[in-house]
Image 1: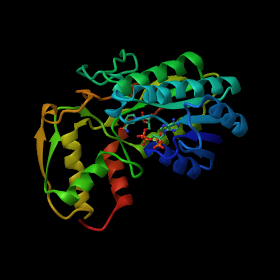
Image 2: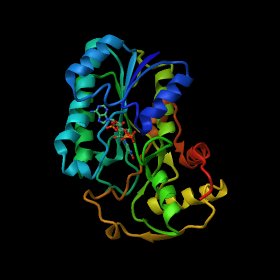
Image 3: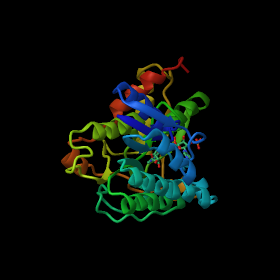
Length: 297
Ligand SMILES: NC(=O)c1ccc[n+]([C@@H]2O[C@H](COP(=O)([O-])OP(=O)(O)OC[C@H]3O[C@@H](n4cnc5c(N)ncnc54)[C@H](OP(=O)(O)O)[C@@H]3O)[C@@H](O)[C@H]2O)c1
């Protein structure tokens, strides 16, 4: 298939390009400079020229805390950008796959979030992402919105890379232990989106368009995640020391935007309609660490 990928230099976008090429698709990956999704004219001209069979939007304004002080940019990318893509997709009848976030939920629910739970974002980033999701859903029915949480991978910046960098400088770290969620690899997200595109029912009259949550297991806290990162990194001899980790409450690590206490996503709908089981993030972490294996610290 002829696939147009936006945000192609981000964590997920980079993996999407690699994985789509591996599957034999023709890929047009655009970084933010080549295609600014908030620029309506640029979006229209690019799509008109490429005439893709499907568009995957992995472009987003993702700076959660910074969004509080520059909401106009966050909304321009996450809301207006999504609207631009949905409109042009409708014009040319192109299915649109889009990535959303656990930050559309407030994290107050006691169990995993399903697609019928009412989103209540607590900050500008989450609110701008939610507005983008809603615009897509209103404008063009041929869409798949995949909500994911705690993204990590070999490209871009993320928690895993931060932990490995901090291990070069310190022997002891304090990590938040009262926020519960699930890490999800950018590679897994990419492959799940491509599995949808490659599914028999994709773009058929029976295609179950809509919003899906991608479940990753097991659910953990950031502290648990850090422990697993250092355990695996030691086993792979990426680091050669035992890190001392101190579990702390969020109150000891204040951020401009309060993080959801519970970010766990329920993937039953995805399993029901596309046969996709939850992602195993520990396996994906091992894959990532093997890929980026560096000289021993
Ligand atoms: N990261 C997470 O933990 C997380 C969690 C849940 C959901 N998500 C969602 O997952 C998706 C992918 O996120 P990610 O982690 O891959 O983010 P990322 O690494 O920050 O990548 C986003 C990409 O979008 C590009 N971009 C920003 N503004 C743009 C614009 N106006 N036009 C076109 N491209 C633009 C960025 O380019 P520049 O760098 O040049 O600005 C960047 O390469 C997003 O929808 C995000 O909301 C992420």
